[in-house]
Length: 94
View (cartoon, one colour):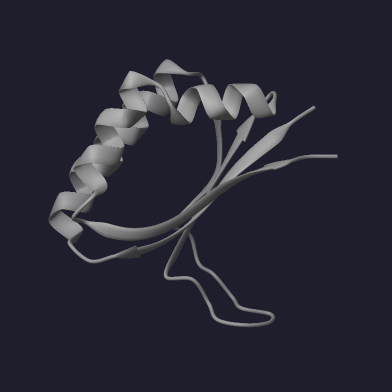
């Protein structure tokens, strides 16, 4: 069953965040994930509008967790530490 990593991001250091984007793109390519949204226009229907939203599709919850814990994405996460505040979670599809 499909699973989705959803991230709401508040970028605090755009230059350093670009390093994260390069590394996370490499991780996504390595793990053959499907990128559904990455920072496109957002319209709040209820509540606050996130600054930046990313949605990535995986075949399973396990694949999403494996991506998150991979050495490739760990390098990206380390580059992002001082560049953004992020809420990230994985949700199972239907």
